[in-house]
Image (tube, rainbow, N blue to C red; front, side):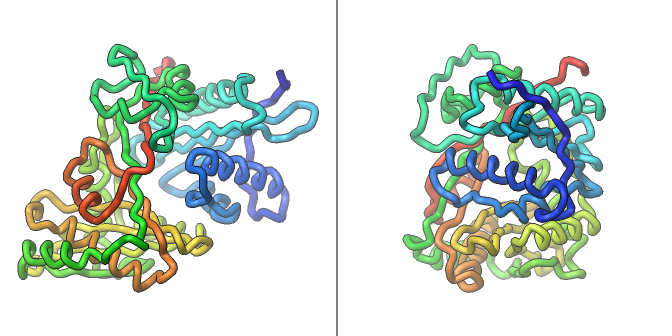
Length: 368
């Protein structure tokens, strides 16, 4: 067994300066894991984008611990710890990645417990993590009496593979299952009929507003409220999460981060023509290093405006806009809780098909 040391890794100022080589090794580990899970580079993150994404901000502290071989100093694994700073101060999010050749030697376990101690030292009593699974890979071996599983039938989508077994071994409990779906735009008819039907259901009471990149100043306050509401309206399963705190400053912080990470958002919002209120929004994200892939982020319709097919209207309209704005886009990925039948139905009508699943796990720290 290789002897290792667990060390903090500071996020360097640049990739070609001090600490840059270590960060490049970490970025490669992250991309290797994504390629191993999905069998492609659709979730590849450039080192520069990852560098920008790992920097701490006023709303989130981001820490990195690395496992180094004592003799060679090679980085064999890494754990990333994210700590919210403005809400959910009892939580942290942890992600452990180990190089294929260094697995099953205790590296991941040592990394995790070092991160757990760091989280506890920062006053956190709950940790969350995510596992990702390609559809049809691995045997779903679900025992309803297993203590690590949520008491819902959605647990059957998470195979009892190495990632799930590792999370369970560390004391995490599966609380939510997300379906990962993909829309192949080569087979997409444009959704014109669906958009027209949804527009008819919405009648003359709503209009669509689009922006690319920064939110218009006159809408940013209302948009911040939509982002805040999204944090509680999306299904959370048994996850111990409270409402996030969003305001104009946080919206602008997120937009600045997009620029640093070299991607941009295409937003479609529905505005109630009578009151001028933003009734909902949907977001597509596109990284400039790979314009063939887009990622569907938030979609929300406020409770008082539901029943008018605004979700379908906004999503179909934004997909049409994507094809105009990014002609090279070939596929779109989205994530939805398996229990969210309303949104899954919209996606299925648009042509999204399941390609994998993500398990959302939670652990209460013993020190709490």
